[in-house]
Amino acid sequence: MRKLAKALLCMALTLAGCAPAFINDKEYMDEIRKDLAVRADILQAAGVCLDDMDLTPDQRQAMEFLYAYMPLGDIVNKEPEYYLDHYELTRKALKEMPWGKSVPEREMRHFVLPVRVNNESLDTSRVVFYGELADRVKNMSMYDAVLEVNHWCHEKAIYMPSDRRTSSPLATVKTAYGRCGEESTLLVAALRSVGIPARQVYTPRWAHTDSNHAWVEAWVDGEWFFLGACEPEPVLDLGWFNAPASRGMLMHTKVFGDYDGPEEVVWRTPNHTEINVIDNYAPESAQLLVKVVGDNAEPVENAKVEFKIYNYSCFETVATKFTGQEGTVSLTAGLGDVLVHASYDGKFGFRKVSFG
Image 1 (cartoon, rainbow, N blue to C red):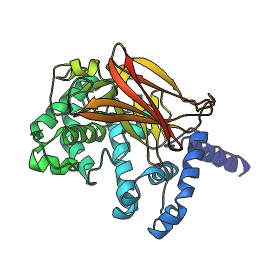
Image 2: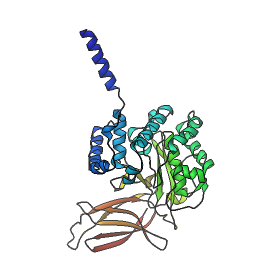
Image 3: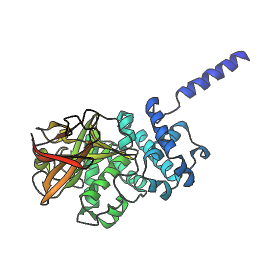
Image 4: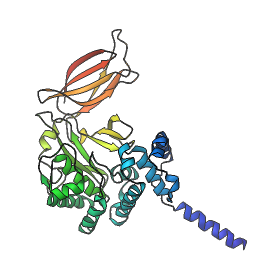
């Protein structure tokens, strides 16, 4: 009897050790729960109580991550079951796609699981897209699968200017058109549906001419590649924007949640981390260090520093940072000129700087 009890105990311990985890980094999980606790009153007012749901440990962690950082409107506009289904679809894709096991936890957490890409309405595109794409790409390499998903998106939508608010992926498929922001939202959603990490990339303003653009980066076997959404090419890292991007001043993406990746951080908010990915495009990129001092030549902490490009006949801010204790901030940018404008307590200063 004692041997049986011991055997059952060993089995229980083995099963517990094999229990799936969404986040294995305990320190990061602790930070998520701190951020989630800040929203306790909001979640209660919205009727969201994860304790009342029958969740496995990994489901609980995924739901805590999503609710800690999702926009407040998403908390009240969708039931918890919607986000739980979304996590299960993510887990299904990673399990069934051949590259699923190669996706690191960080990339899965920030670039596969998130429901939202931009400011689009939330829909059920993940289950629809997986149903159309899974069999089409499951026997391909990860690299070729990215190209094939983009071909699929090209079959669904063409470029056409539209409303400034981004339409949802299913709405873009239904209308069969969209601007670059909507086409890239469609491609990111489609790639994530089959377990491929993807993110929408923007240049807030081109360095050489007016206007801006959005496209997509996909994570393939440890490396980020770029591609024009719904603009299929035979290889990755190729698009009509290669030349202007090579001398751009800033390429950035907004990552869901508190992101701890290797890229330069431009800005952190309660919902997302804005990162600078200019090194993927500008071969002559360089880092500029800015120091802000007051009338007494002492460094100014928490001064607002704006990096501006002359575009559309005015100076457009492409990045904003705040100085630390030493009065400094830095920005990495490509070839071009910027106006650096610093302000604090009603005073300001500015200087033209050439990058590259």
